[in-house]
Image (cartoon, rainbow, N blue to C red; front, side):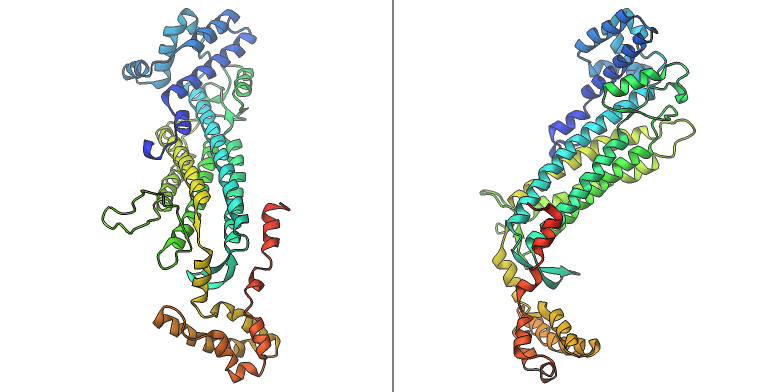
Amino acid sequence: MIPRYSRQEMADIWSPETKFRIWFEIEAHACTALAELGVIPNEAAETIWERGGKAEFDVARIDEIEREVKHDVIAFLTHLGEFIGEDSRFVHQGMTSSDVLDTCLNVQLVRAADLLLEDMDKLLAALKRRAFEHKDTITIGRSHGIHAEPTTFGVKLAQAYVEFERCRERLVLARKEVATCAISGAVGTFANIDPHVEEHVAKSLGLVPEPVSTQVIPRDRHAMFFAVLGVVASSIERLATEIRHLQRTEVLEAEEFFSKGQKGSSAMPHKRNPILTENLTGLARIVRMAVNPAMENVALWHERDISHSSVERMIGPDATVTLDFALVRLTNVVDNLLVYPERMLGNMNRLGGLVHSQRILLALTQAGSSREDAYRLVQRNAMKVWDSYQVAGSATVDFLEELLGDADVRKFLSEEEIRERFDLGYHTKHADTIFKRVFGES
């Protein structure tokens, strides 16, 4: 985590202070359950909650102890004992370090997922608003980066909306995957701690008991979680890349908001660069970087090892903090995106009507021409227009006029039938249908 790409609310989830507070709550809830079972005195559990609950854990002190004992959980328990006193002997009864570490990690991932879901709700709201704003804004659809057929800018944004809606659904499932608790002791057999303790701690922290923890919570759960974060990051990059392409000088159909006083280049005062979406492309790479290590963490030795630990200490904060920042940044980009409908229409018209080629092809086949002959007739006229575009940068030959003057085409189609196939509205007539599929009847 670096401050430049961090929001405080998400970063706080991963702070040492938050971690140690969660550790204490796990231990204290376990003591409550142990007291209910008669394993430790009720008074001891109350003292642990009272004194530990008021404690301001000293991160530097815990680090100092850890340098001596070479064990982070023992260092914390030693420091906790300095607050609690004699009753600290009842803390961590029958538990192992993984009970604390794994349960804490899952609490942090659940909290992170909740923030990410809030982020996605705001992004979805922005996409919906802009999609309806531009439902009927005609623009050219591109395949392979080349003009294909007309669509609307609103349909483009509706596509992004349903993609992030799917991402949200996956994240809800990923949150459920990691919302488990393990308080099962060494090798996960509950030999020295009753399963009731795990059930109590899980319920208190909003988790569910891990069915079989083997001392550690299985890492396939975490692999699923980080894989979903990687997919969300890829969807961010997809939309960011689309905006970057649309902002290119030769296209300039949409543009990141450029504020008064903003500067795009240290050398060239005229520049208005797509810095936010370029940044989002880079941030997406960082989030996806966590996916492979999370997958590799699944294969641990026997009932446990700690090869996963160092990985998770890094990817947990880095992936969630970065994705949180990226989602908020993308929402800002969408909210403030500058859209240029006239430029969209102008770019489409630069190709001299070629975007209607498929309609002419279909009309010829419906009028009796073979598909092969129809394709040849349309293409030979289209290439004249294309060649003129290549030379001048805007077509100087008109596709409609070429077709009207082609005797072979006119054998099948009248002037009226040809002109009818150049109606832009034909291509966007089902925009409402698409919007109803995406947004319902709203």
